[in-house]
Image 1 (cartoon, rainbow, N blue to C red):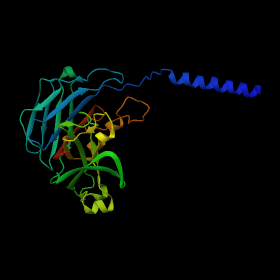
Image 2: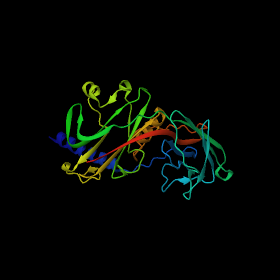
Image 3: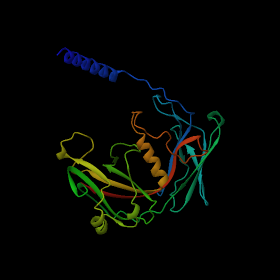
Image 4: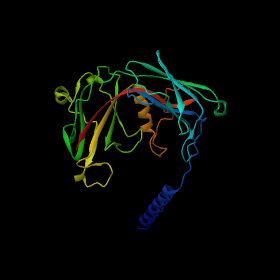
Length: 299
């Protein structure tokens, strides 16, 4: 009996020690790398002033906004035209001096030269604008299904369109509700799809529905879910689907960003997010080109 009591007391002490240990604050001292130039920008098939943003990377525990890079010389060129970019009233944000629309099957080159007070140096990137799909023929909101099993109080957004035959093509999906990006204006609030062996099929057409089932590209909670989340779709809401054709490189960059999202350093996110900004090891970010088709529906 005494041995059992001693064992019981030992277990209580051990449990208490574990609980205290779990509450101990641990400060992780990450190994900081060199400060890099951060570049993010795009060329799209929209007729507009295109933008490039330049900033600096920050330390792991840094707070506040990024350090922006001003007074750089920025321009974009293809085999035909060269377009100069000028810094806007917002530091580090550069805008093309003239409106233009990117063209399919064109390769665009980005050139950046920093002034001496910003450390100097030349940076460059290249982006290919792939062919666009013809159109999104229609979009439908209906009960979300996984492997033919319906999910209660969840709506799926189903597009119908002729996909491209290239298996290396990726589709970037953004859902807007009442003209606001669903979930907030963040790169992580998007979906990425690659059709693989189904490339060239009519998406969600009879053949795909029969062999693989229809594919929803987004999901929404309904009012019946009882959720007070902002991600609930209400009757009368306007839903817009933006479907962009992107390269596998940019798809990988978004995947890396999504994997790195959050504050838990134990989640095993990639040590380096891929980039197409050169010279290698001196910059981070991405310069990409894309075509986009849109379709709108009222719930």
